[in-house]
Image (tube, rainbow, N blue to C red; front, top):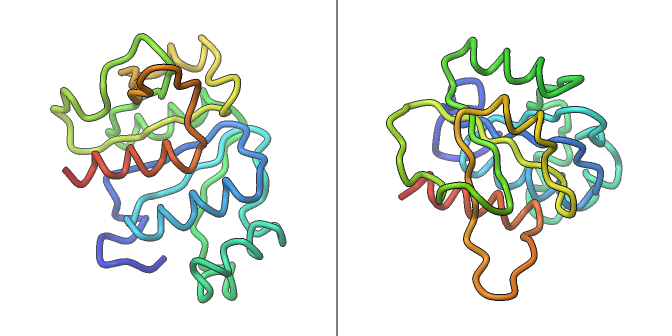
Length: 163
C-alpha cells in the first residue's frame, strides 16, 4: 500500500471491521488505511476487498492500488473471537467502537499497538464482541447525531492517531 508511513505489516495500528458489506464503505476504508499505513482486518461476513464494485470505487481514489488488487493487504477472520486472539497474541490493545458509554478515542492511551474494532453502522457491535475488547471508544456525535458512516468513523480514529 502507498503512503509515507510504515507498511501494513509493520503498522502499530489495525483497523478491523465486522460484517462490512457495502462496496463504497470498504473502498473508503482501504483508501484511508493505505494513506496511513494501517492494517485492515475483515471479520465475519465482509465483502471481498477485491470485489469489482470495491475496485471500481477505489480506482477514483487510488488508481494504482485498484489496478493491482493483489497489493491490497487484508486479513480475514471468521469471527471476532479468532480475530481478538490473533491481535492480542501480537500485543495489541483492542478498542471497540460503541455509540455510547465509551471514552473518547486516544484519551488514555498507554499502549504502543492498537487494534480498533468497528461494527455495522446501524447495529454496532454485539455485547459479546465488545466484551472481548480492552477499551470502549465513543466518537462524539454532538446534539441529534445518530451515527457516523464507517468511512467517517475510520477517518476520525485515524485523525486521533496522528495527534
